Length: 114
Length: 110
Image 1 (spheres, each protein chain N blue to C red):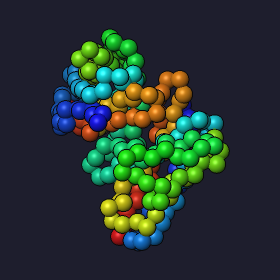
Image 2: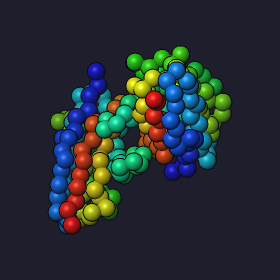
Image 3: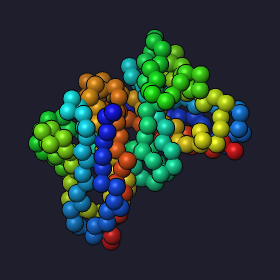
Image 4: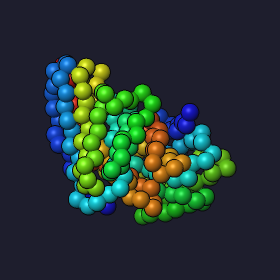
């Protein structure tokens, strides 16, 4: 499986600011995904990021709040904009394996908004 | 609304016993089923995938799928303390969208 890294691993941010999370993969992948995992909760898909097209957002998530870039087949960013304490969560990127539909997760970014 | 339900636990088993984790899903069109293990403070790790009815074995892990009953399970044989984690069931109907259950916390008691 691909090796996935995320930056930053954690951050503490002030209300009203924005944070951009980077996801880097060591091989080319078609499908990348961004998830949120709130404390004690399961994973919720934010959006699917495919290279060369606009990200597809799930219900409850909007581009103005969570803009995503996918400039190439090994890299994606998720920005959490105008943050509030409710955005405190772990943000995870994952990559799809194609034919098997398996997904592999990066180590996550733990975000705390004060 | 596609839903994935898991017995929330927590589930405790003695070392060496069989741990049984269960998952049901609402969408009959679901095609792909996955079990992830998540240690505290870590990201989910894929441990099993299953696509057709029946059993799939990988070492101490066996996944069981029954599409007619919309049920998928994970058996862990000879449970070890290192198996203590939260186990997440994930279901996909199109290969893009994964729906995760809320997870079952497993503790293996030495």
